[in-house]
Length: 503
Image 1 (spheres, rainbow, N blue to C red):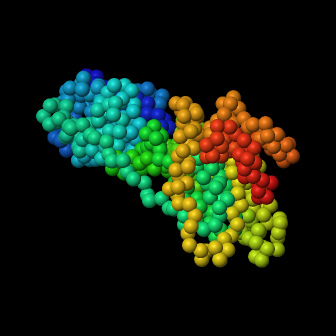
Image 2: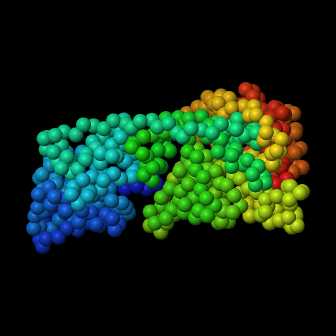
Image 3: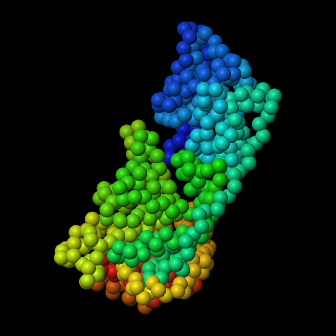
């Protein structure tokens, strides 16, 4: 007899439907899995056999063949256990075949039949909704998958519960979505004393999702400033939260099915490999740039990252997505993040401090910051120098603006951008504007155009740099509530590209 069940195979954040066919035919007793399975999928036959034995179900002395279709799609992961078991139970007429065919299942089986949670329940629920099927998953994955309200999610504790549900003995109650988790308490920008220009750069970067690099001596507050960025960013929209959660689901980072609207803040160490930053590895998993999607990627000690890692950031920064190419797969992940980088001016860190600079000035700084290539540096919209804070300033009480006050202005500027760009998914903030759209929304007035053309020619700005100045000027105008980009907005935008460290 031939029976079918359905599951998914993951290609990036996309879950592709896989038909699990089970044929029980006369012949020498055997249990084989075909259809390009990896080692974990091939081992499913032993877990399924043991789980069925725990339920006192003996396999017939026949040839059992499991085919995973389409056969040319790589199948990876232990979540194929449950759909294989379900198709086999349908072939053995233990559960109704039509119910098995109407189900998308995923889950790992223990030897005693218990269901173990697996990564990717949220994208799998999206695929089930698209196919108008029910999703069957482990109990621990149910709250996560239930966020997709367009499909019914059945979360079972064990294979025994699955059998009782499909035979009508004890129906499984559909799962409910998990809680909306509050993010970690944000740090207040008021804690930063001095550094008014750096705070202004943070506000502009947050308002338009612009990339920012800070160069300064050790202890000047670069990391402290970057850590306050989440506190001035608005919460994610429901669509953004779902996008980000799908990536986190693939990596198994959703705790108890809870989804957070707090924007991600990722800060990888400078010893991280290319696969860890960009994505890849044996299963082509998402990297830090994808985990920072719709949030912030903070890279401290930026020049200390391997040169090949830094250079791979150039294309994702421009396109907002990364293609991880492997011999057997090409996987695309979204990575629309805001890059915040911090660097010392030189190896010793005190190039700009006359009292402490080393004897290799100025070559020390040229060699150190020279590790950041010109094309990569050109992709930073905002470049600032963070000078050391005087001891007298450290004794002063905190009297600057709070993160709440700055966040209100940022939210207002982003609301203007949302109204400007409408429902276009590829255009959300000013950093996404390009081509004719950029010309329409960011063309300065006559005085602004004159200033920009003169400075661009004098400094030899590239076309990319010219357009990034326009985007930053548009954001500054939004923060000021101005419909038109004027000369002061252009002047301030240009000032953030004129630091000596970026020359």
